[in-house]
Length: 129
Image (cartoon, rainbow, N blue to C red; front, side, top):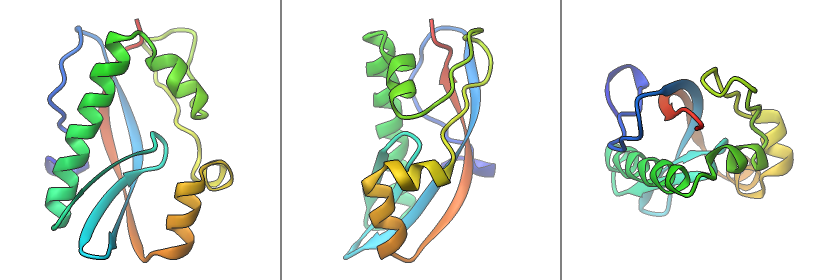
């Protein structure tokens, strides 16, 4: 993770980017730290929190690269409860934590089982072309 909680993924996809603020849940399971993003249902892990964050950045980069190449990013986000505006260059709105607790079994389990800390991060996601 780069300074000020901004994800600095390595993917490159066109010129247009959309800034989006996402919650991240960081917790420890056995001997691994896990950085989990319930709004995207993605995670990274490692023996330290820093390595878990770095792993999450790689996972996020691969997710965007794959969905952009397959032209499925907007549909995939909608299936996860995101609001995608008609003007695709405007902000995409992730689902609320409350709605995710009701619809995402993994997040519900993490929320009710583990001690965690939450922080928000700003990502630059590709504009939906």
